[in-house]
Length: 443
Figure 1: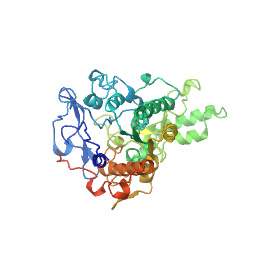
Figure 2: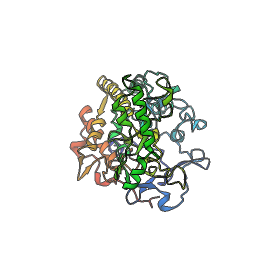
Figure 3: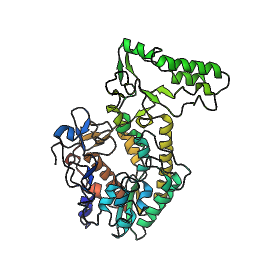
Figure 4: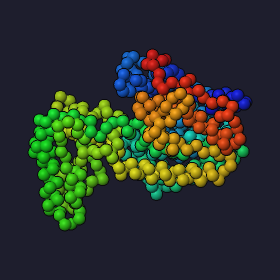
């Protein structure tokens, strides 16, 4: 988009780029973010596992570039962070500040919105505003809190879901401020992030077992005791309505010869102790995953490892259930969807009410990528990890080609809403110019 705008007097699109293509961040020589991922032949792997140790040269203490910057997009920023006057404070890194904004902020007390308005913008984009408000919750396996009805974001944890009313207030403020001088802009709605390969790549049943191992795991020496406890609890509570046969079946763990589901801790299962019956307080909230659960991408390198090094009977995901951080249960997925839907109602209402705003429907686009795929030039993009072409190796952010398609849709929206002719004139990205991954040797 910047290239197209430059052709009509848009000026240089200055960006706070990293010092090299190794990636990563340092603070005073101490590494605080790891180098980029690369394709390891079958899966994404850390760069240094392929090329050996590298020096992370982008240092937020020692070598920040000088702005102002046209690109003020900050990885991980939630909606309300754009108004925070402490988000760019070096002293707050690790708690309330973001090292990427520290690198680009005009001062430690600057806000992202303030730094944008200081440049008297005539055009702007707000891309996927609201996505990070649910993404950190999702990536953490739902280990945060859904803060619905909590209107004070200063009390939120880093993995919490932003209250829809907080989002509505912030988004309305952003658009009102950015258009106050007559600027036009493009905004997007929020996709269902659970369509991303970060959440759809790892199968729920990745555990191969032979008949002997399956039999042992089903015995009283392993999960047979747990299953027996469920039956005892059901017999004692039968007729009370507190513990149903359906939940007993859901919680019963059974392994077979062949592929097996991982065992997980599900916080939404009934607490059989406490107020119900203290005699069953020792029965944990275990069950096996189903196709309705989503395992996060990072679980692929954790499942099957030993919780106790050297102890083959402490396999994570089998003998040791996966903790909340590794899986999104249906209840957690619903919280994400409900928040996303509420954000999108706000985004559409605000954009419909302002003639200076064009809206790109990224929600539909990601859904198409995740189902049918999208024809883009000579390529078909989909949301498969590595092979799909649209989503990068972290399973969340887009590839260069994926972002070029997003830019195409932005230009299309500008044509429709503001009478431009980028599409008809052919002033659009060529997908062949934008790769889907980069070699480990790229420095």
